[in-house]
Structure formats: C-alpha cells, structure tokens
Length: 214
Image 1 (cartoon, helix red, strand yellow):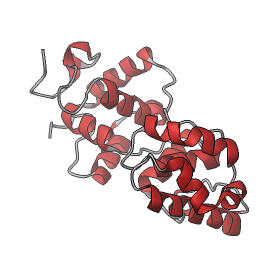
Image 2 (image 1 turned 45 degrees about the horizontal axis):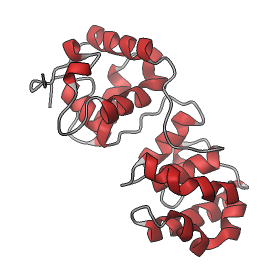
Image 3 (image 1 turned 90 degrees about the vertical axis):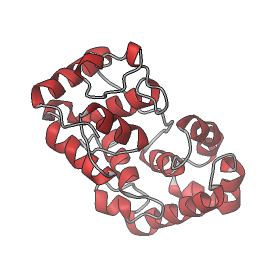
C-alpha cells in the first residue's frame, strides 16, 4: 500500500484526468434508472462487455419492473445465462423488480438505504446508481478502484470501505462527481492488474507505485 498523497498532488492528478476526459462515462448500457440497477447488479463478477451483450435483447423486452416480472425468472435466465451466477442473479432481478413495484410504485428510489433494500443490491451497486443516474458524488469501489487507490496513493486503504472513505476525504470536491469513473477507467485500461502500462500513464510522475514498468 502506497502512502497517502498530499492534497496538491491529488489535485494535479485529477486535473489531468479532467483535461484528458472531462465527462467520463460508465460502460454498462442502460436506458433508464431501472435498467441501470439491473445491469449493475448483473455485473458482479462479470465484465461490462459480457453484461451488455446479455442485456441488449433483455432490455428491449423488459425495461420496467412490470415487464421484467411478466417475463419471469426463466425468461430472464434465457437472456443472461452467459453471465456467471446467472440463476441467482435472475432470481435477484425478479425479486428486486417485485420490491420496486410493491414498495416504490415501480420507480427506482434515490437513497442509498432504499437501494440497498433491493435484493442483490449492495453498497457498491447502490453507489453506482446514485452516481450515474442521480448524479450524487457517491464512490463505488470495485477491484480496479481498490487497486488504483492503493497503488498510486490517491486513496489507500485495507478494504473497500477504507478506500471509499479515503476518496471522499482526500479528493477535492470539484472532482468527486466523476472520480469514480476516472479511477475505474484508469484501472481498466492503464493501471491494469498484472502489468500496468506505466509508459502510457498520464500520472506516472505523480504516482507512488514503486514497481513501475518501463
């Protein structure tokens, strides 16, 4: 774990991220808040590309909780069986859809506690939805963000909760809205797990990672 970077260095890092891509976007395809919740829930232990491939046809048929319930669990399975843990995920999709209809009138709630009350929706999923759809500065820490936060010194922490707090505490407010996507995309395409692409990294000179590649 790298040491925590100083505020001016973090400011410079996120200034560079913003200059490179001012409006970073998530890669999960969705058409509304409901399909975003479903897509994020399905993405656990799966790639965004794999989820997108499975959900393109699914969301054409079922882009509301009511339509998903009409499709049924077996109907969902038929569309998502290329995704890992598809049976359990299909059950969660149906159960969360039922709860949305029964408790929230078919609408996706905008509070973390309410989102986490949905079957199959944990804190990370809730934070993604809050950030991407409701534009809250919520920080969803996945494996990429955990790795980047610790390698670089931007947000070191022993677990995902500690990294989430470090992001909230140490990244300047003006960057909070997009911090999640800048970090996840940096981890996905540059600061990759096995052999980070340090020679192509726009923050190489500011990063605390000791084992930089050539």
